[in-house]
Length: 614
Image: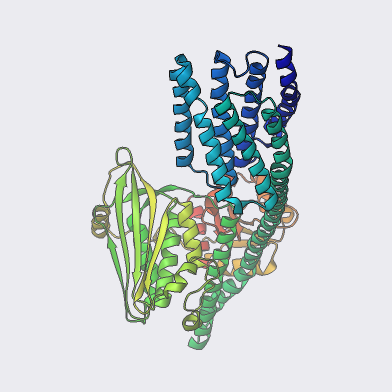
């Protein structure tokens, strides 16, 4: 027994090294890479095998077959399998099939050990065979794939395999117990760790550190880009908002000039100013909407609407755009489409008019066709997927330019279209609005033949009479002509008192000029404080109140003014012309709103609606 203890002393001294190495690998390296994980399994299996051989050293050795001997050979097979897997991982030849096959071989080997366990002679013949097979295969693998490591790495791997193969053969053929085998194996594993694994680990940690630094730098860059983008959006929104105020003066005074002009030349010049101003205003509106989308501030305001009326408005919109050109507008609406829908009708109309405007600009002859179909879906047929197609016979788009057509400030066929006005915002805005509406858009175009744009948007069906678009169209055609706004009441109110509040004097001039025909008593104020003093001193039927003013703005003025004039109608004057602006201002407490630049017809409409109610 003493002899066995002396022989086991070398291995006993190596076990703490294997324990420390296993703990270090498990805590620091086990999850880093496939190679590290395989190496950890190799170290642990070597530790277990060393422990079992230590048990054999202090008991019977290899001279007789005992239960410990049989367990030891099973552990040797597992240890050899782990070694082979480590080599396979290190040489980059590991695969799912490769692992599965060798795991099957390991399972068969362990099964045979159990089967032959009752026959000592057969057991001693077959037991180490699979372990030797695994080690030899690993040895061959690392020779075949020696180009994967350097000369020093190749030498270290060969020494380990030669040692293990020799030990297996010696113990198998001569039944000799070699107590130094796992001691040397431990030394080789430690040496392998420092020579093979540690440099790889250090490189991995270095790569991870670089990746983390790159991630932090990318996050900082994204934050800076986000801040810059937000600043840009705020700047565009602010600039667009500010442009509307002088545009109100330009278009308003121009409207007054047109109304009072006697000669055709002045009227034509005034009309040209109006067209140019409205074109500029459309660009400003698009910039404002794109800024809202980029800032994540655009919301949908849904309500019930009539689909047929939206389509007829679109027809009325495009008719003057194509007048004077041999272009025909065709409206095709599926007759069975539900007429009463629920959604953001303003945004839907904005998408349609932008697409029609784009088609009208680039089509000089032929047809522009608006086709609307739908697929009723949802529980109880509660929704419809509208499919809208705008197709023209215009100049078309080159294939290589279609990828950029929906990008802001991009235009196709720039050489041929440089004389056509536009900032390249319309289609970009269309795409973004459709995405916000949970829809999608597609473009097909052939250069020289035309363009076809199709989009799909889901809309809810309003509960009610479930009338179709064809039935509603027939009803409207057969109905008696509706009374116009001019028939709803008088056009002049000599006794009415109106207060217009705006911090820009020229806007006050424009407003007074537009309200001149009403014959009402019109007063003005240039600040919220001045307006509040006038409201306290006397009664007004209507107050047109500017929103953005220095000092007391329109909303704050409204809050104080309603205490003194609860029966007065307050109308917001604002450069905020977004699709949801009216609902926002009514929610603030205003009775209605008038966007800048305001027009006389719209101002008179609001005036009539408010005064005719009194």
